[in-house]
Length: 124
Image (cartoon, rainbow, N blue to C red; front, top):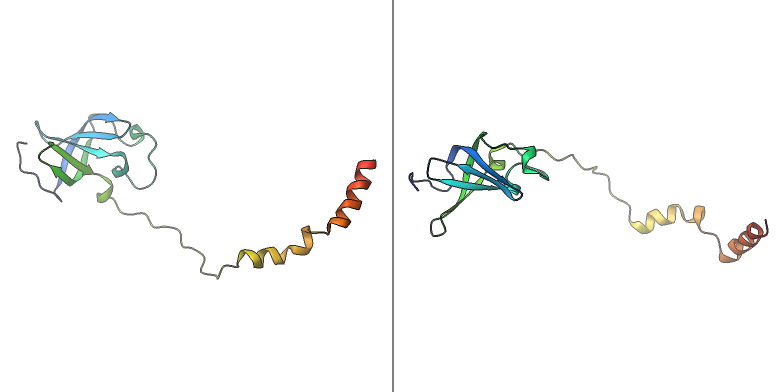
């Protein structure tokens, strides 16, 4: 590695390759790292190509450096603003039994009543 990179550094690099599991980003002429598919953006990423192209310049943050293996883990996602989740309704939720009890008389007849109805329908 020509430059001394450290974890937490934010650098600009160029996408040099795309694989199903992520994108390789060149940080300088002799150093490249991997942006794993889970570190591209918030939310689900099905295809890396939907977000990145070879030759594109990207700003990345260094997450991890493995000097022994010569690998650098990068992230684009941590530099983005985290999306806000829709606010959940604060009303107390009814239990399943309460919901069943509300509709109990609508859909549950005794077997005797249903049997008589089934016999009528089958005779038609």
